Length: 517
Length: 105
Image (cartoon, rainbow over all chains, first blue to last red; front, side, top):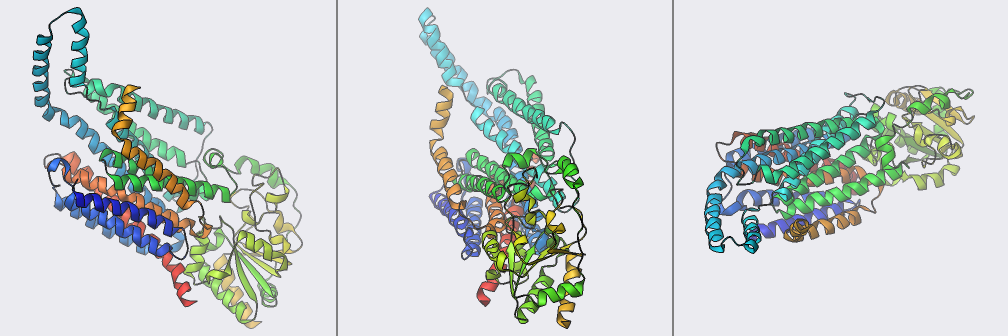
């Protein structure tokens, strides 16, 4: 590696660390992204022009630049055109691409591992001749036999297991991440439905077990099958077969792993797969002794894992729970059957009056708002109420929307001022002095069962305590339960009124009504 | 056991890097407001696109007759680039929105 390239890789690694650090603070986040991006560009250019494996410069520049160009065009177009509400699935797709890239590298390097045999054969023959001469000189006494054996081993023992282990890890993790990300993408945009069958966890474990066994077979076998001196090349096809079987099984596992997990848990899964791809990238770093791949990959691997755990914490669920337990489902029956009493509806005109004459209004946006793309009209309503002297704030539950922070991004897109967005604790402190709460397509995050009902599947999840406000108006499309599949007591409380309809339409009508008040 | 320790010794620098990076990653992320979870995930997503470097190396080393390496390497370069470029652009778009109202304020 040239000395300039070493410096470039060092700079690259530092920009990744700095970038990640800056990304975690609101003020510096955007700059942090640019810092990491420029470090990446530098590292890529440095690799293209300065990387010289075994003293030879890289070739196939035409292919490399064509690939970079195609990838850049597709990447920029996809990233620019995607709607803000479809952001999570876009991130998932990009993540899958990275996983696939890592898996492809492993496939090529695996073939390389075998291909290099023939070219190295000549060198091996020289070794054999030299060893033969040395053994002759040693003679054939009893004690010398051991010496001969050690000598032979020392001469021929090229341990391929370390390299193969890294190739296999890259292959398995990359493929799982790719297949899983594609399924997660499909789930988020509604193309793939939740699918689970009884015993699925056992099947998944069996597949995982098979992956480990096949990898172990390859690792144990590698020094017998691939070493330079192996005469018996007939076992090589089998060796290949096991490798591609491993690839197939990893893809299957990725699909099976994500398929039973519900749509609302996808953010956690994407974050987890994100850290998987990080580890797969780090495998490449090991393979090529490349420090910038290693630091970048591992950094994302560990940061992604922590981010996953933080997200789980925000939902008060353990990672194990997300991955194994399909939330709600079977529990929905008995809980839903409980007699809830009556809910009452409110007309648009009444709702408009309630909001217009309140001193303080808290808006609780949820998944329904994101689906209806109602963030702009929501901001319009907020401005209208502000003009009438109403104090309007937003209460953002950590897992509102489709991803933690997703709601903030959506509202920011609609130009809602940053200081109007309250995090859960702040919002809960203000709710008792709030006159009217407007819940827009949120359900589980305002369900008092999380506090009161120990048998509820969401018991213990921190919620927005909207029932502390004077009046609650809930906009939903229907009385259907939310993602957790449980009824919400809030809707049946005397202070709650329902306002049915699509969030965007309802808000537009509400804006029109308030203008007339 | 011998071989394991030899392997570790041969790669000791990389292993140090791995261990320190793990702790660094945890440290950097631990105190993040939930507002930034989505952009951060997206930014991290772009950073692991560094795997593109591996794809470039594969591509650049491929002999002209080795079609498997050429085709797979080419595909890997495209996919890796989409990951890097798309990831950074999408993150920037998200963060741009936070920035705008800050300026107006």
